[in-house]
Length: 492
Image (tube, rainbow, N blue to C red; front, side, top):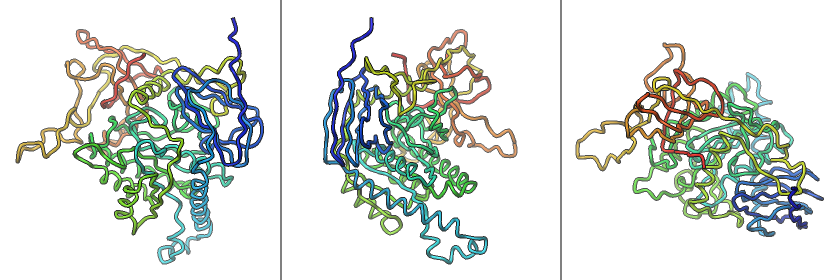
């Protein structure tokens, strides 16, 4: 029996206002632009096309010129606000756009002869593309600002493809939590679910939106807090920065688009007695050659950044949106489950009854359902490491003169047969193969290998030395290497 059509409501938005909504678990919302112009975090909506939102999404439909939208479904919260920081964000985008244009002009106007004198030319040194680090406390909307600035850049009509870097290991970015990653963005990032906060990426299975087939470079940190192993985090940041340099050396036109780095709340303040955030921020600034730091809604942090970097970089304070929602621990747990489930099974959001031809981010609901494989493997088929000891006491807590037995950077082999292995329900990062050239191998190569996919250990059979793994595809893992962190996932 067909369900009755859900209630539809029309909202008329005045210029520079936004319709904000929040969804409950298990509900969805369809928004259709009937007239005018509207956007979701910088991604423009097409007229007469229903846009679907789900998985407890919290978002806003903003309009510069005014619009009428039709909303189908029942959000837990919905209202229209005329107090938005979008004008400030748009002005910031214009300033960043000017930096890109100057950088492109310098690139196109420089001959080999000019390049020899480039260091002597102050204007050439000033013509640097924007390399932006966004910092701010929890619940300040940093990821939203990163998406807005990225979407405005790719919508500018100049062919920009800015590099978006996710440093927040508490959210999945394009893949799963526990990672840092970077990807060049060629078309606007869609917002429809917190399971895909930065849009959909091409994975090992055909789960991709065709307009934005992002292929991020991913590294596994494995923990939600940067203080868990700050030395590993700093090394991964430097490694990711080196790969960005390689890409830009090979593609100067991509370099002029610049990059935008989204950071975790722990960069703004730390609840830990041992605070390593300044070392990690410094690694980001140096590795990505940051020239602009955006501080979102935090006066003390702004003063701190001015004191540390004010003489070298542009430090800009930008307002926090009043629409930012404070997220509790249980919500974050549910989002973590959404992200892992989406990685394994794809994104499934059921449209409200009566809504036909709904889209996710403007694309038809196709190729978004996966069939992961559950495979039984031998213990010896997969080599698993943990970086550093499972629980690492600070050096100050060790007896005077006592050396640390296991360093923070030392790979420790995990034995699945041991009771304390921690493998059951663990999320494992499957690494790319080692360099086949033995002359190019080095002792710490394991720490610098990118991730090519993720597995979950669903059961362990110690007597038969076998375990069952869940993965998005059926590729063999025999002879491969994986890393374990502190993240676990169980199907609900």
